[in-house]
Amino acid sequence: MKKFIVTLLCLALFNNTAKAQDDAAVAALGAALAIGGAIAAVEMAKEAAEQTAMEYVLNQRSDLTHFELKTESFVGVKGKDLSSVNFLTFTIKDIGNLKRYVLYGFNQSGYSNSNGIDYNRIDWKLFNAKEWNTMMSAYIELASDEKLTPLELAGVKIVNKGVKRNGKFIIDFKKQKGDEYRVLDYSDEFKLVFNERSLGLFLKDNQEGDGEFYKANKSSLVQVRRKIIIKTHEFLNRH
Image (cartoon, rainbow, N blue to C red; front, top):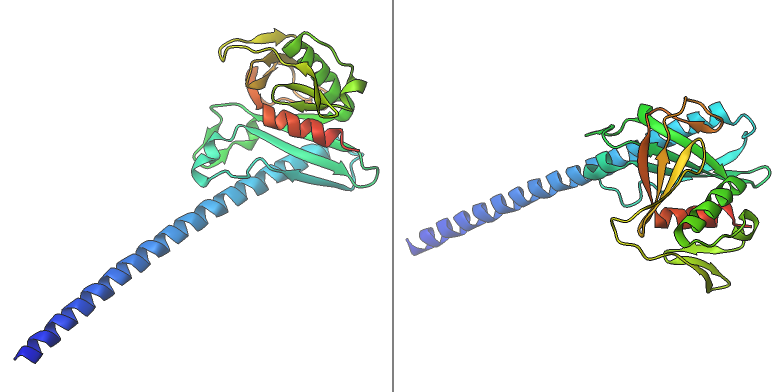
């Protein structure tokens, strides 16, 4: 009788353990599928962004016939965060003449959905080194009240707190409160907005297809993180 009871207890314990293992396996599988689905969603969003950027380049720059196009806009982005992606950056390198470009894609807030970016609502701006350095000259003057020429900017490094040359600060950005802004009416396309954390680009409400600036939306303010400015400047001025 005792053997029978012990056998029953062992069987019950085995069944409970097996059930717990099955439940754990099902939960693990569900988690793996969820993670895989999120990764797939981010990869699909990246591919869609790259295709849209390619279409812009093909439409606007017939001289680019052999080039490399890359983006880091989706690095570290999770599936649940896709709807919050509102700024795209692409680096472009012409394989033939080694010229470099950066393409910015501005996605206005309110034009994302649960599936991510609405690519029909993207405003595009393509910068070469000269255009970028000219804008950075104005931006640095706005941020510091000191001026560097576009030519001088080709040989310096923009960092979080100012501008360096050969590892030493030559310009310090002004310290401002988080809710304090400086504004410059820079061009027919943009107003520049400076605060301590970022560069604001106010996209004016112009007609669509103005040169290499394609605008799908009405005027809006887009915040460009300082990290993106630093990377853009380094890429365009790399020799």
